[in-house]
Image (cartoon, rainbow, N blue to C red; front, side, top):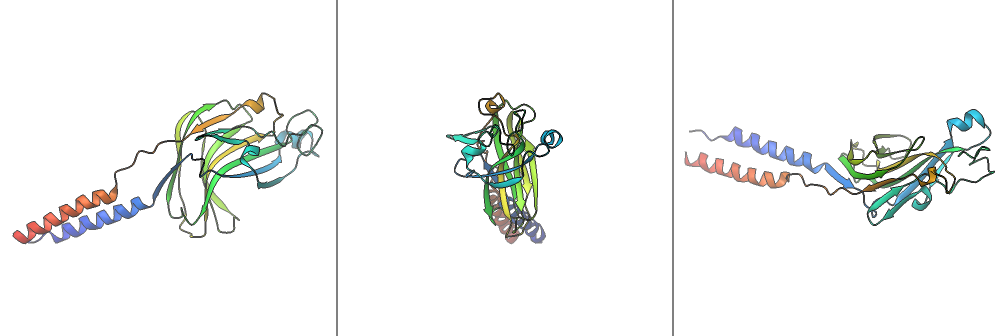
Length: 234
């Protein structure tokens, strides 16, 4: 009787291939030790451009999390509209009718360079409360910036009640900067206003481990060994 060599080799190749693929899957969740960076982009709102074309401004810079507003209490994250830029009588930030002059894009995120390249990255979270009303919105994101930050690709998902995740297959470029986190969009709000009190509350998701491919490969290795031994006995 011939040894089942081709079957053994095919099974071995399948196990190795599956193990390699599994090694490229990474799951992350809401973690105050990971989501430590803040960045704000801003530009005049459509309303400002239409009604107060000399008001508002454009810019972007690193910001503290409390200024965004993006605040942790333990592992629970609360996002709220930005209020620290609102300044009555200052046209760059506030329109004459009291509305916020600029559309604020507040980012809280984690960033690594090279760590999550060539990876299927999944960012999971649980939205436990969401009182945002128009024009305020929020989303989760994974972004893949090139080495010079001159361009990026991304995947996003709107924040709605319940457990959700966003998954993105990053590029294989070792110098790419991979970010994951949350964004809040909307005009700067007057402190104490109803808009300023709106929020999204987000908690971590405890990941359920997938079956370990290397453990399965170990079982498969036993199967391969058994097949070899049977072949030798025949």
